[in-house]
Image 1: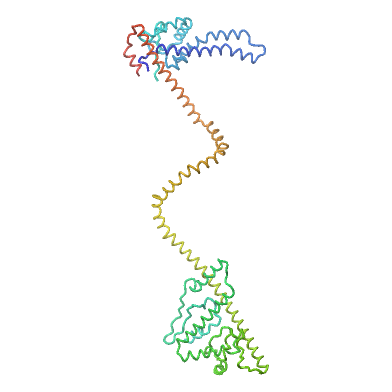
Image 2: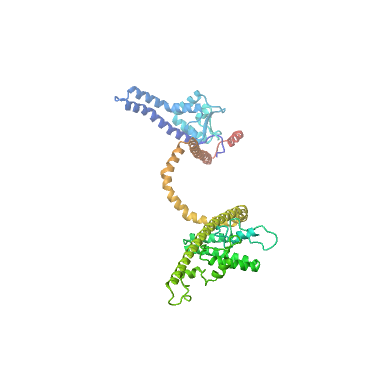
Length: 143
Length: 342
């Protein structure tokens, strides 16, 4: 077990990878399943508005995924598997707005998000750049 | 005394259960006060009759029932015994009186008018009035009282009939032989009847005796022998015999009986028991909960191992980074480390 209470780089990257896999599955499902279901029911095929709506929802799915899960329990699917939890710096659970902003920053500035994760290696509390910016910590969730 | 004498001296054709070869008939007392008649018999009958009955039962069991000759022999034996007993009674009486009664009895048996197959010496009441004449004329008439000799015709008085004697004498002799044979037949019939009755009575008494003996033996065994045997045997059985039996039979059961039993039962179990068992298990809520819980435990165990591995990897990566960079992060707060340990 780690000697620190804060999640390190490997755990956070592994959780992020699992989240990427879960988001991919979710986006594919959201973007294609309604159209396929419609086409299987109606012989005319799916209307364009449905395809457009599914596309919009698919674009919003990653943001909604991170926002809702961080707000509800502080853990995404990857965080749950790896046993880490995202909290406010003072130890409280993040608010909905706080979670939404953190998710938007991470998705909008994904390359910077990944580069900023390297700061975990030398930060005293294993904080990435977005953690410093948004005043959050990622800790191990002890059983 | 005279009353006893009259009854015991003329037992005519006695019933089988009252007269027997070894029956202890009441003997008249020669002198002194009259003693009561004492007949000592076994509870089930006379021992001799019981023995005879057992022999009869055994013979019947072996498939060889008593023949007619045996029955007649038994009857004759009884008659002979009666005669001997009466003779013994005479010996214990005053000699003169015994001699008189013997002569009297002989005179009664030898008379041609006496057709009784079991003649007995007459008593004072039925003594013939012409007994002195009969004594002198017929008591010792060359053994005519011997039925066997009469039957065989060996006694033909050849010496008394000289050659050339008249035909009337021969005819009279033939009539005497015929009467002798007739008397012999009656004697044989009476002996057969008496012997058959004796055998029947003996068989019944033997059966009753055996049944009572068996019942008594069973009751005795139940009350006395079996409890003692059980009390004595149980510790020995428990300590020695049963362990030996178990030790000896278990390998045989394991090697031979159980495999055969399993081979014989398995098809039936597969065909009937397993489907029902599986159906019950799949619909059992407790079993479902148990399966879910075990699955959850397996997934949780795998996740915990993953978390431990990644956490260790976190530390290693940081250590490598610090070696490469040469610096490193400052130590975290002691409170944070403490919280991480807990």
